[in-house]
Image 1 (cartoon, rainbow, N blue to C red):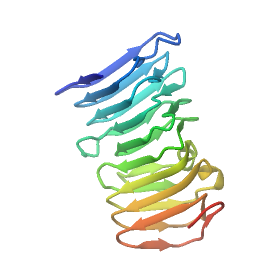
Image 2: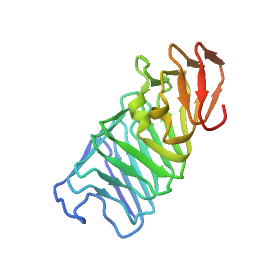
Image 3: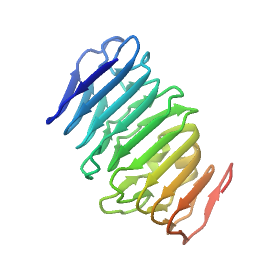
Length: 232
């Protein structure tokens, strides 16, 4: 087991090697926990190799940025990423372009004010569940949505999530969905929307394989919503 923590400042890792064993995280076994009081930045030309770990936890108050230049971000275990641990709304998760985050059937929990995924980023848990939590309750926009201060998951970003299990989007605020295409949602077996406020589907039709929408303050349907393989 390995733990790295700062009480007041930031953490920045930069692993320059490019060989198979030169990645930032390459232990033989055990749990890895890295916690920064402000920002956590990980830059690794050799990738992030967590093939043999039992769990990976990354935590920061003011944001987490990961750029594995080789494209490899292999956790291969239960993974927890909290970029806004103090729920101040200042912590975003950023994954650089062309990265493949894999957990190999380990569940994945992401908590952040917002998620910024570069082009061609994939997040693959195989059969395990993915939980995405809005840290400060300012709401989640899915698709072509404008939401000041909230978490925006574009259609292209959604398309990078891959699981035969559930993708759960959770917020204490509202969720707005607009213009999600079949291609955007096709890699997730079932999407669960869980809002403390309301859920609205507006402007353009959205399509999911299957979807479950749960809202404390009601659901507003302005346009059609379709599923192409499962339940609604």
